[in-house]
Amino acid sequence: MSVDPNSELVVTCGSTEAMMAAMMSVTNPGDKVIVFSPFYENYGADTILSNAQPIYVPLVPPDYNFDPAVLEDAFRQKPKAIIVCNPSNPSGKVFTREELTIIADLAKKYDSFVITDEVYEHILYKPFVHTYMASLPGMRDRTIVCNSLSKTYSITGWRLGYTQANPEVTERIKKVHDFLTVGAAAPLQEAAVTGLRFDDAYYADLQQKYTHKRNLFLQGLRDIGLPHTEPQGAYYIMIDISEFGYESDLEFAEVLARDVGVGTVPGSSFFRENENRYVRIHFAKKDETLNEALNRLSDIRKKITPRT
Ligand SMILES: Cc1ncc(COP(=O)(O)O)c(C=O)c1O
Image 1: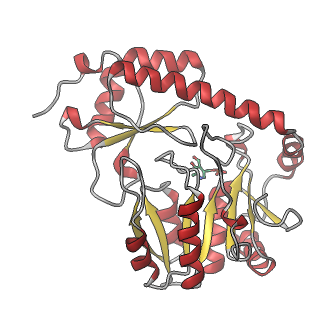
Image 2 (image 1 turned 180 degrees about the horizontal axis):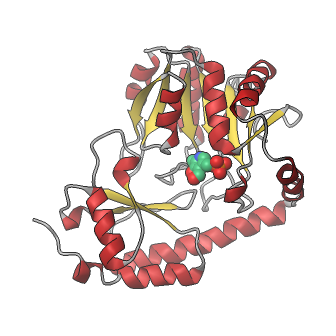
């Protein structure tokens, strides 16, 4: 359950388009939107493309918690909306009910929408559980859910997403969507219905498969001794590269790809703050690939000389 099971969905070309349509539907040029940092790269661009102004609020590593006082300072600037990615890319954070309640109370107090990105709602690791923002008291009409079939059904190339919102916002999203892309490919939508009819066993199996991959990769990183985050949801790990002394995480990621043979994304591409201590790796891969990556990483200290 995210909003009303009977509410109308707008099927979009991926949740990235869903997010863009949601932003364009509730903001006017110059309006502010709160974005937690680190964030999925598209949010910054979506805000700018819809002529809104992002207000960044840090999720502070290594636990990626936010300071409620800093968040309220951001709300005092009267943003039209806040974006909440839960479970979160890149941090792997799953927002607790208490944290979501703090955000919800502020959204109500300052009359803002909450735009959620819940594409990883089914990729969770015990004991963490997903709480739907829209299920919190008074939040049903204030939440715009952006979701996707990409991750849940392992069809990332299909670009099938959707929004779910109150009827008035949905009407606005339909108009924006009509001019952004007209519609997602109809045959893919029909095929996706098969997935939507899967029973609970499918989702339990999905969790179990990702839990296995997460455990495999985390154990490997522990054995190698590379400091890292332990994701609560989604399938990303931030590896702390401080010991190598690189000023640029981009340069480190290039050296890692070239000399160790493992591809990562420099952490700075997700942070608003000047943060160069991390590279992000993901484990949505076959076990052989994960084992090979760990095998290559086991030599990292022989292959990358620390800079002092
Ligand atoms: C947080 C988040 N939102 C959205 C997307 C994109 O989803 P879609 O395939 O539906 O465009 C991704 C993909 O990496 C993601 O990590």
